[in-house]
Image 1 (tube, rainbow, N blue to C red):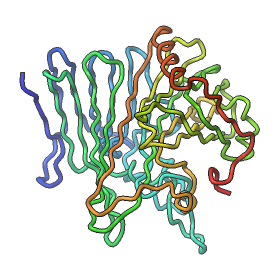
Image 2 (cartoon, rainbow, N blue to C red):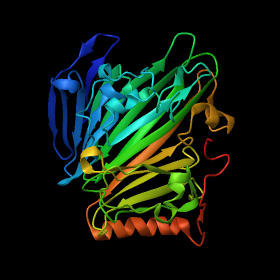
Image 3 (cartoon, rainbow, N blue to C red):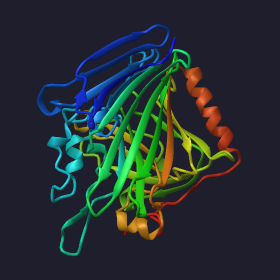
Length: 382
């Protein structure tokens, strides 16, 4: 049976499809709907479901992953934001620089492309770079769904641009793919500088896990070379940097910057497992392209957003100017591009979790992690 495609958004031809539901024998289902209520009004949601994994993708929000399900296990987090939020309700130019938080409730949102870190202001106090950048609040202008029975895949591709006259001109083509009967999904992003002039960019994949995947006693497992606390407050918790406590009202977030170990080809793997080791989520990616890793711990009360962020990136989410000084930016000549791959695999039993841990231990080998007990110059912005 040949591959089937459905173009659900094409800005060039002013065409769109509000509703779609297709069952593809032996692979699964593809669905597209447009939400109509509250802050979600106008948000397009594409759902891919292969029977082992279901994923909600948000073309309206930069091709973010809103939620995922592995069997009955919901993967994501409970944000106090009632989303998914249409970008029209997110003021990225809000003077505090924190407007991005008004729309933050996804399981995975990209941070970038001009900048991806903390907000930054000029000498006059004017906002120059908002928190986590703009790409997560840019709608795709072209979206196509494909079901390929021969390859056994369901996929959705969206094209999102972050451009401004006289300034940055970047195009991201993102493809999310589910393989038949596999408990996870793959992301492939190609970022192209569509200007004739050179450009700099940053990318960070802000993957977020809360209840029930994250619970009291959960552990983050990775092949670690170096751990650095972002600030003195994070340093106070360095002894438990990779484990998680129960809900604590008023908990102040703690952030750790990591360098991971990898195979010779650059591939590495991380794992978040629950307290009993009976469920987990792995991320696999190439350290040569995403060399920096951030662990964000926010184990506050569930009503306030009990969550951890596990974040591979081209840099650490410090202010943009600081990361530029450390040369942690991607330089793209006119017409040049870079590609990113990130795989999510979900584990629903103890055997699968143990197998993921063994794969990580094989990368770790005999290397002992170096864990600093205070922030380090060159890693953490003053």
